Each structure stands twice: as C-alpha cells, then as structure tokens.
Length: 198
Image (cartoon, rainbow, N blue to C red; front, side, top):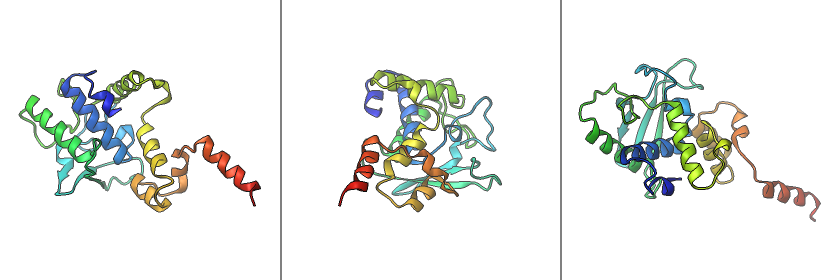
C-alpha cells in the first residue's frame, strides 16, 4: 500500500497524511475511530497535536479514550522506530513536517490528523482513500473496513509473538482478540494433516 501511495495518486499532503495514518493505525493496532472523527472534532476525546511526543527511539501516542477504556483514563501507545519504509516514527515526522508547511499556526489542541482543508480527518475520508489505494493495487476494496489495520496487525504477529503480547499491543482484556486473527486455509490444512501423521 505504501509503495502504491508514493506513486502520486494523491497530493503530497494527502500522501503524507494517509501514510502516517495507515502506519500508525497498523503499528498501534488502532480502530479507525481512534484516529478519525465521524462528524465534529472534540479535543477532549479525539487525537490532538499534544497527544504525540517523540523520544529518541520511539513516539508516544496518547489515546484519551477508546472502546477498551470505559473510564477514559487514557492509554499510551508506544510506536518504535524500525528503520524500514513503514516506520511509524518517520511517517509521523514526515506528515507533521508537511502539515507545518501547510498550516504554520496550530495550537496543541488542534487535530493531529487533518485533511487539506485543515479539518480533522473523517472516517469517510480515511476509508475512501485507503480503498482507492487498495483498488490501485488490484485488491477488492470492499473486503476492507475501519478495523482492517487492527485485524492485519493481529494476524501478522499471531504466529510470531506470544498471545499475551498481542493482547497488550491491541489493548484487549479478554480473548476476543482471536476473532481478529485470520488463519490462512493452508495453516488449517497443515493442522488437519497433523491429525493423521505419525
């Protein structure tokens, strides 16, 4: 997706915005509603510029609210540098640089992710742009939704890290995270073959 995004299908601003939003959503196991707004921006619950801080090797994204935080105590999501083309820290820095050059004056309570008109990124805008990218690379965009980054992240690490770490990364308190993991048919076949092997 990121490679297709850099082929110029959107303006440089939208490219930086969508890249940062996608990479942060993936590495942060975010729900679409945690980085977008449905209608009006509310600094008390939506992501603001002040909700991102940078350290030497990582960035901290502070979610003020989420589905798994009914008491709104907030949670910090650590996004570590990984020195790849999909580094969440590099993507955020690149987006913030482009954002600053377009909107030089912004207060800390301004939306973190903004569209070209300066308003907070909406769910519809984000999903439509993600679907455009998917279509451009030959994937059926109707198979993807606002939870796709969360599902993709959980599925990607399911066979690589321990279950309790998946729960921590996705901020799950129950075993419901297993619903997000898509098991390939080839893995199911291997499991069934193991039932008959000596």
